[in-house]
Length: 155
Figure 1 (cartoon, rainbow, N blue to C red):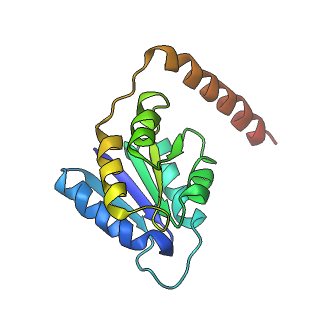
Figure 2 (figure 1 turned 120 degrees about the vertical axis):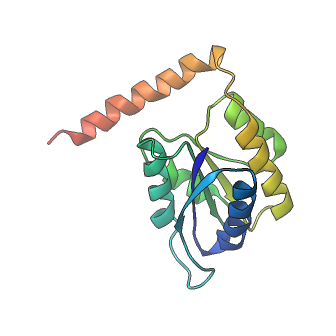
């Protein structure tokens, strides 16, 4: 699987650990930055590129990291076609895939144990979308997104 990963300074150590884990699992990782824990940087500068890579189909999924993961999920969800979900447990890692077909995982590096986050990453990667009753709900999200994205593009 092709996976884009990005973070601000707060998530940098966890990003490096995730990259090792993803490579060990045989995934192709595209790191959009940041390249160090200092100086402080702004998370949208790394979340938007991850979301855009996912939305364009250049990667299969994305991972965004930061202090809490909250702002990272919000920023990444501004990209049309992205379904970023904040993962905080084994259950949310599983449910975001089964029910929401999330294509971007957001995790807080300061609010979670890194060992837990690595486990959640594996769960998120291995869990398939359930389909069925969830498909019409995602179709509604896509339709809304398409309608409003197009309306913003008009001169």
